[in-house]
Length: 330
Image (cartoon, rainbow, N blue to C red; front, side, top):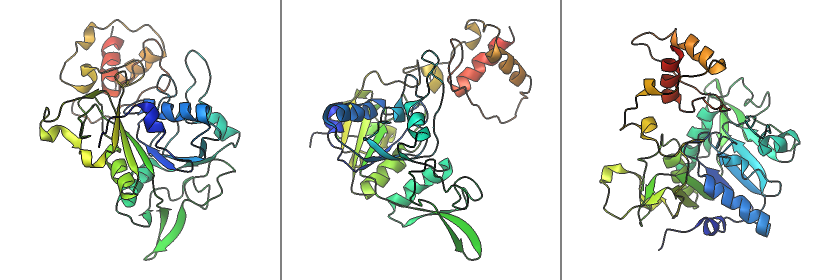
């Protein structure tokens, strides 16, 4: 069976009422072309309709990599379940994501689950269990005694239950089948074997593919390039072709807003970070200076980033930190 298809063909594989799951961590590993293709087909054909979208984590940055905002179209999206949402102010348009408008105006059924639960839930779908029993979310917005993860008045179904087991309280996240899965990788061969040489992380790609296949659904991958079979060592393949039904080649897929493949982010090319232009005085430099003063040799650190990029702000967690700290001293 031929596995390589184009974006339009991929969009036509989705039926009205399907549950579509997609990987993505803000701008990273987001199958943006596939999500955009679904929205384009809906605008042209008014199909597919009334889809449920499952995002283990907020997918797309809603700036240059729109991700979940592509499919935030009334009629196309009926329900969304997401581990997080993305709500930056666009740096030039000064607008909020369309998905936030649909939620604010109660146009869709919107649910939010803790990311820890949304990731682990895929494992339960893959092993065909009735659901995920966990303490994650107890006493928070996910607890049915509070919001139960419901973000809109239209979200009336209880997707999270409070249960007791051996004298302890847990939250129970029931499973439901996933009909279509969008995943992303760097390369695919004709058999659909996927590798990740140009990606910053793998995240839930494997778990999502397993969950969709266990549901009897189809997995579609978006990749930067097609490679010939037997051109990669076997251990470079992170998702075997047996889990991939189709793949779409998108040569211009972005690693992050304004960033394509960059070895300085992924390793294999050590950049001279101190040769970068001096940061102008502003919030970025003040914060970087203050943070750099707290760094001590041998300490473990966790890195974050801003949601809205300015001309000089750094989108990569580690490289951006290194650049900022180096430039902050000048």
